[in-house]
Length: 284
Image (cartoon, rainbow, N blue to C red; front, side, top):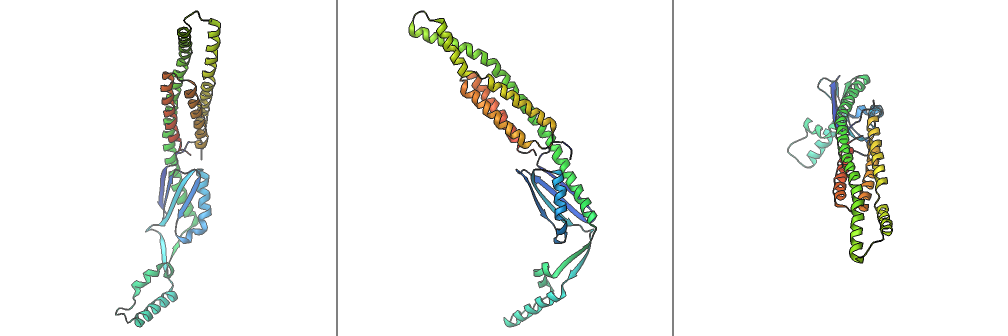
């Protein structure tokens, strides 16, 4: 497969050469494969699984393989076993003095051991049809993945816009904090304020409320996300980790800075991160 981003949700099918193959995919932390197919195809399951693993790395994928009406199938009957079943049923009917004796219809109760389908097919036809279904599943996952990629980038852009607002507010916050401190101390002392001491106290306040490092890390995580998304392929877990780190930095900003303007924007930023977390859950 190429480096296209894939969703983990999709469907692909193919019907040809006597086979009907359906492949459905949903979210899963790992690659989880489940096959439903006739018993005579059992020897090919390992090779079929290999084809799936070459195309996908995550998602629960359910594969159903059945024969179509075009399949060349010969029905074989286990005559010996069928006779034993009918004779046993006849003996039971006589012993219990039942009115109706056994008939051929009763053999369908034991169809799995009495009847056997013997199809005439080429393994290459199976693998060819299977590959077509897998490719159609991959195409659908890629289309959905492209849509999710655009949604994530759009949401990331919204979050970056909110971050720019916080950067603007942070300077105002320090000014307001200084003025408020000056006003409070002046009201308490009602006399001339030591400007140098006030500056020292304000500096301590600014240091405790400094969010420049958090802003820098958010910008770094955002840049990393864009780089990973541009690289394509399997990105889900990497992006999920970065989103956790983003949320950590945003929460730190909220705890350091109590300014109401900043608090409002922090809530908006967290909302955008949560949106991205939901979106990334469906990406391989």
